[in-house]
Amino acid sequence: MNVIDELEREQQKESVPELRPGDTIKVHAKVVEGTRERIQVFEGLVIRVTGGGLRRNFTVRRVAHGVGVERTFLIHSPRIDKIEVLRHGEVRQARLYYLRGKVGKDARIRERREPVAPGSAKAAKRAKAAQSEVVADS
Image (tube, rainbow, N blue to C red; front, top):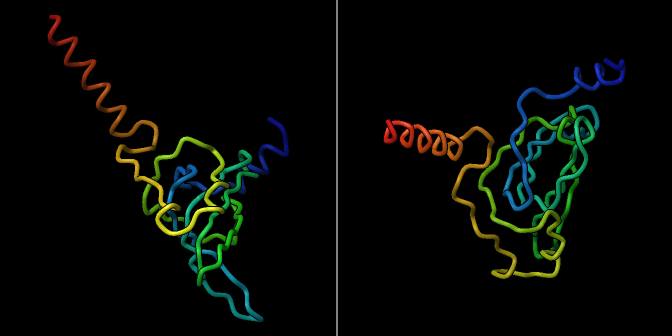
């Protein structure tokens, strides 16, 4: 094992939610103002997820007072307190830059109903279906 790989593994967070483009999330980021530190919540739509491992980052877009605001975060950054996934969006592209030109109802994304995480309900349904086929064949 490489020394750099070991250092990166130490700095990674244990529990990171599965983020995909189209998800609506709340990012609780630590903001330093002078000598004080506070948590600021940035809620918006994930328009891209790039990188891998410790360098994995994501860009969140929201519209504040009629102006589009985008902010890029490192997933494993110590400045991020927590990430909450509010809803999963159903999109067919990895980069949602086309949303920059959309306003109002045109900028909406349809919600994905099935779970996202691997080994979740979808995998459980497949296993249950396979098990019922084996029982039916016997």
